[in-house]
Image (cartoon, rainbow, N blue to C red; front, side, top):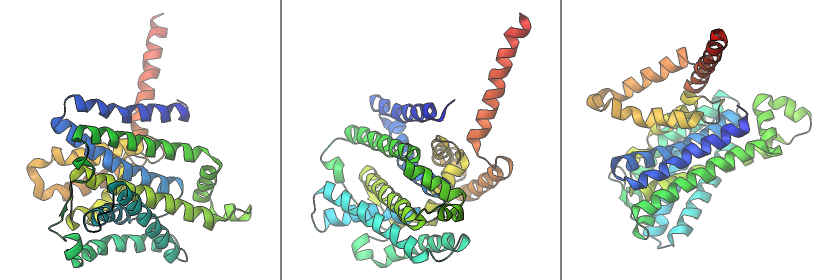
Length: 316
């Protein structure tokens, strides 16, 4: 199947959860969390696997959008939409700032710098407890004080479609092609006269903006956030979303999010050992399915269709 049709099919699948408003309840609630983390998963897919930029601070950019929205709305009494936009822009600026402060390093060291920031950021939130609520967190009515939960759920579905559709479109443009070239061979891109620094700054800016906006959507959906929600495991889960689903596929983050979000329900009876089991599953996938679940499913589907085609031909 051509990539263009895969993009369309992925967006159609992402639109299907809007039907859950007809039933509501747990199905709608859990699908909302899937969509929220899918946004972060696609952001990681774009920056790390399409633009080739090592970054592990997704929980930081996400939480900046969330806390920025709450603080500006509740403390400074800004309009909710202005707070969401400002929180997203703050995350964008911080994302670019992280890159500029680490751009002289290479490879592993760049990733480790952002990972350490993800480790330390919850401590910063705890230290600012009078403002952030620390581990006790902050409650927030947000947009759901204006619209009913079903309407906001539909808004969430639409926002997810727009973000994913934008990233699909971006990767088909000249800018996306240049980012792909930089990811594959940075030195070659510089040799042919491309200003790689400019495009890397753009990639980090897009990452920060979309991740922060996703964080704002998150806190408006859940109505609560604390330092526990943004601990380092959050950034690890986000990083693994495209890796588990298949980073080479446009629907890889979709599959990866389903695995990461729905696994806790499977292991709900052994909550104490959830993270150990998660780690074991991640390792097994990396060892036995290094390209992710998606490519493996595609391979088996191709074999199945070929077998079905041979069947009638043999019978004839």
